[in-house]
Amino acid sequence: MDKQYKYENDHEEAADSKSTTKDVSNLKGDWLNFYLLLLLYILQGFPIGLSGTLPIILQSRKMVTYEEQALFSIVLWPYTVKVLYAPFVDSLYIQRIGRRKSWLLPIQFLIGTILMYTAKNIDDWLPESGKANLMMIVCVVFAINVLSAIQDVIVDAWSLTMLKKNNLGYASTCNSTGLPIGMFLGSVGPILLVSEDFNNKYFRATPTAGGLMTLQSFMFVWSIIFLLITTLIGIFKKEKDHSFELDHKKISVFQNYKLLWNILKKPEIKLLGIALLTARFGFSATDSASSLKLIDAGISKDDIMITVTGMYAIKFIMPIFVSKYITGPKAMDHYLTMTPIRLIWNITHMVFIYYTPSLINNNGVTKIPVYYYCLLAFIFAVTEMLSFFMLLALYAFFCRLSDPCFGGTYMALFNTFYFLGWLLPHTLILKMIDFLTFSTCSNDTQNGCITSDLKNVCVANGGSCRVYVDGYHITVAICIVIGSLWYFAFRNKLKNYQLIRMVG
Image 1 (cartoon, one colour):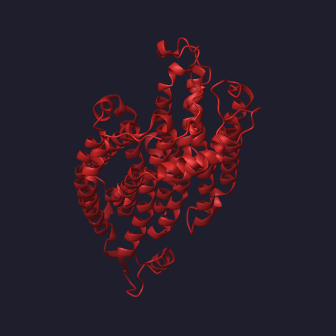
Image 2 (tube, one colour):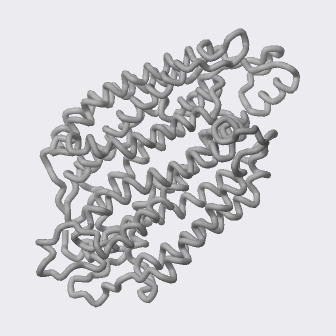
Image 3 (tube, helix red, strand yellow):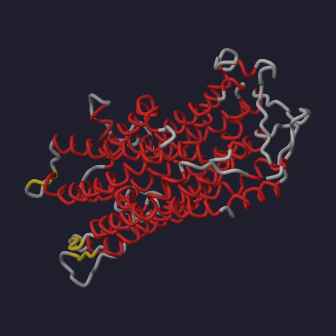
């Protein structure tokens, strides 16, 4: 590839060129940049967490079907195409404002404004009873995620120049720590802080109506956080101008897209793209629907979110202990070793969800025993650890495979393939579960309870919708078969990819 297509490798506040090779990591003089970068990644994680928790709220209020949940899953699609608008972020900017601030400031102001608009209307869109305005919720969250995906590109790029050269290793620390914190705040807050039962049980001596805050106030607080932090960055954070440096080369949008096109034409990338797009199909049913099925069975959304909170603790701690064992030169070997284990573990989810109604119901009264919570936490923890190990190994594989000269483009492309590989089956799986599930109203056999309106009619007439064929179990079985076929089809090819490195 011609040198003109290389990404510029400028670093903000870099040490003198004579000493950079000898520098060691030292955050003295760089702590403010470190904390700012961490804060930006926390803001980046918030919309992702919010996108994951709204389906749980909708499901807990019995407002939507699984087919309607599939519609909601499109809100994450903007993250799958960020590789397409990354060239614009890299190439178009106002030099006087700063290359990254030119995009960051308006994007985060827009996110804050949309969150404030959402806060004003969320009680109408998502009432305590009745039908939710699903289309409006989808449109607003989709818009937030479009902006958040652009912010993702901006922050990843700025992380390479915000810290000194000898401290660039801390950029990944900010990413791996900040994103989970933001996702945690965005997912747990709207459920646990708003929950009356949770707050009366754990935080109040005397039961009181309502949670610590309403969903409306939660959205409003975060809109202020986005607007305030963005204003402070605009006023106080100065971005270094690299345009006068000798090695600075501005890459046009066209050149960026040409580089991307040349990478996509490589036969190795085509095969790897197919593998990544289908890699997660074997686990999609358990990942997409297990929590929703537990809520259907009678487990409260509060209990689900408490369990999810524990899973975030695993995400914070596990990298310390396992990174050096999984991220070596044979990272794909570890991924392929854990794939059949994860497929077999899907059966545990099937069995657990199948027996959940009988374990938590006693003569028609829901009473959840302590051992059930222990089983729930254990199953979720094992699933989370396997998923995390596989993700860690895969990212290490991406790093080894990528050409260092164009590492940003390769990594963005691989991550896009992998995220699409989660999102495409996620949408399909929820539709499959809905399609393969057969129900009937207890007092009207002509009512198949196939839509939320028919379910409401059944309940209004004094009946209840009873499932006699559960599409979840059928779908999980189909996914296990597909995952097994994927394993045998790509195992040897992916192992061989560990011996090569893409060039140009």
